[in-house]
Length: 211
Ligand code: 5GP
Figure (spheres, protein in one colour):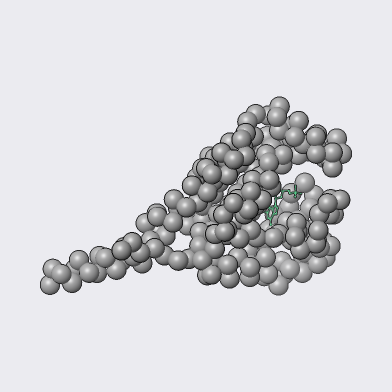
């Protein structure tokens, strides 16, 4: 019988603003019941359709700094003038329950997570091209031209770090991309580091047989 470790996989998903990673996360959660999406804390103001505790936990800078001081965050970073961070408790409890936990975070946070938890799977969501990225950012209609320009500049800087990720997925067709991402995460359950206990058990059985 195949034995698998029941602990979930911690997955970081990053991508440029406008790469469509939010839509991709929603689809992944809708289509499969093995995932839990971490909700971040941020000091940025809510966009019109965003809800407290669903999109983010919206904090003042002072509140956010208190969370850092109280060691409530797994990682945190500043992105285009605002703080963003991952509350610890949800991530650990969901991993223990066997859910594959997704952190949709930017690259500085991704590197902090990899440093602390080397087993973390890192996936970068790419747009089909830079023109399409700009079109999506402008089409959203929620950001000023100044913020859009900052986010495009940030994308150029972030593109330098893509090789640090384990996989990229190209978000041109949402159905295809959702299936690919699911396949990548599910394959990670079968890396030796995620099956360390099972491997140890079989190794021990083999040694016992030799005696
Ligand atoms: P937005 O303001 O567009 O919602 O998010 C801006 C960037 O912050 C995105 O790249 C998003 O992935 C990232 N982000 C969201 N939550 C977190 C978090 O908890 N930690 C870090 N490091 N980045 C985050």
